[in-house]
View 1 (cartoon, rainbow, N blue to C red):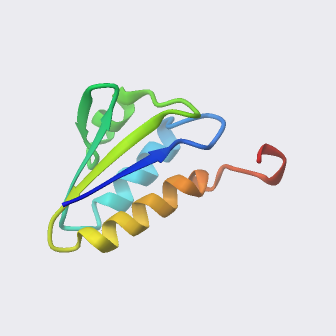
View 2 (cartoon, helix red, strand yellow; view 1 turned 45 degrees about the horizontal axis):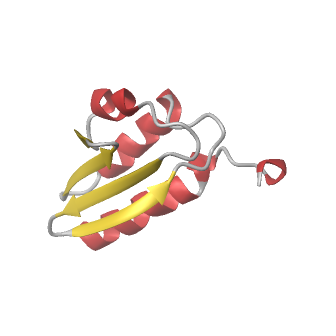
Length: 93
């Protein structure tokens, strides 16, 4: 099981488009994926679950990934989040 902490860096936070991108990416992997935030635990492969977090810019998430392809899944998911879901521009940094 892999547990990693990440911070939401894009200005708009984890709104519909990045949430959908996260779920789509996570669903490509066989491993289970959960997100912990402020005492809540949601299924990271559920768009409804991810959207209920309403994670804003600066929110800290703990990712929990468990399964046969957990390493590859963790690397891909963390890269997507740290890249700001492609929404971080130079003037934002």
